[in-house]
Length: 398
Image (cartoon, rainbow, N blue to C red):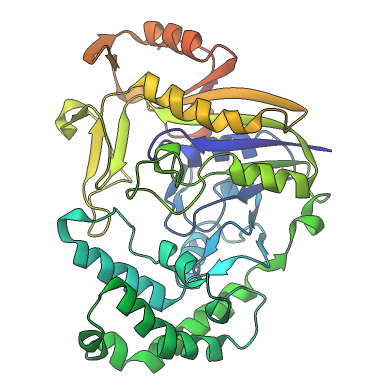
């Protein structure tokens, strides 16, 4: 039986999951980072003394030498994969191995364009989608004749069938203007788009190893599950419709742990010293960006997700999300170790919290005491910078 670590965002994403994945992968020999949800829309930043990279498809433990496994719950996008792989290769040369489950779903250009047109139609009520077709891929894959997976042959034939049959059907369901779409440059250049996509698929398949859990369970000393998004965006726990079509917590991990023969799980729920969120949706106690003196290098306002927003930390809400996630673990593992990871400790002088509907300011040592009281059974980890060496266990007086 094997041990594993799980890095899970406790809020709305952008909590520092890439940092903690890199940290945990660096602690052991021969680790495997497993992407257990999400897809190429993930943006997990890892910084070392020599490199800075934003990981999407490739595991955030790669700079620590860890191989990657894209599980069956990960949505592959060959277009985005190729761009990221080539960018990372320029930086570090040889990239650790990337294993892909044979049952992964694959995004097509059609999913991406439908996603973008739908968000444009929603105007000010956008769902904060990244515009790369993640949810549309899941929607299309409900129909077996339109489903693409890495191990499927006849990809060109299926793509033609998607364009001829599924796209007009989906436009009708969403009440999008198909006549206008047929006049667009996308529709007029469909043969070139399909050809470029086929080249990206070929590149993707040439640079990964198609496999399954059974073939990997004995090859590695430890597994590190790398989550995408956060519990506040979970398709069950989050506030619909401003959620991802994904289980962002332990549900998928509990399924995979049986296949990988895991009996011990160290769970790391991660959040910042303040809340952040992309685009529309719930963010209680929101404040202007100027409220915090933050050096935000990765997350910016963008066309599809909209504004990058800030809020004051609410430990009661985080306790609810984490507690709901942990409820799933009960009696399903022999050994569980709970951990809380707090990032961006270096970017705030004091901690702002919401208590009794009021914003209070406390010192960092007082914040630590509150965390100890709130999460009694958990070890506490804090990052005082953006590199793995900046993560400390317990309270460090800085």
